[in-house]
Image (cartoon, rainbow, N blue to C red):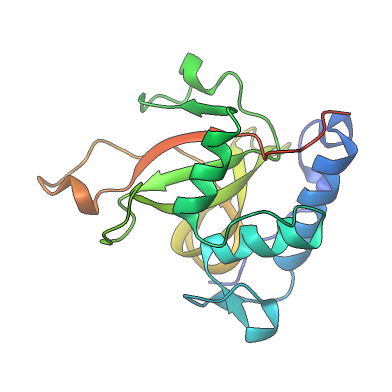
Length: 190
């Protein structure tokens, strides 16, 4: 399934975002047009693909955030230490826990694959907002199989942001869990 992309005009309220948020989202969406695959360990589109934290690292580094860490666990620590993180325990789309979610926020998961790291964050993406056409929440990043518009996508793409269903197995480690979201440290609100 080809990578999915959106234009900024297809995101509800895009023009109302702060200039820096618009710049980051535009840079992320530009990468979704380059047919990039999912390449574990890569943070450079010149390699033909990137992994989830590599995508975030590349987009932020290219747009004025030189202190962004390279892996998702350390990106989570970076956001948490700056004090602008909202935890999400609910699995409901209309949870109050998502009330502060804004375009440009980083989204964090654990349990997307089995790895021993502390904190155990394994996945990160950039929140885009709601798609005008469907009113659904969407995000951008690199993945090896999340869905957009009901179809699995691989690589650098736009994806649906939905909270995971209840764990279907007893092994919660391999059941992806959305942990929460946070503002990019140093992102100005104007």
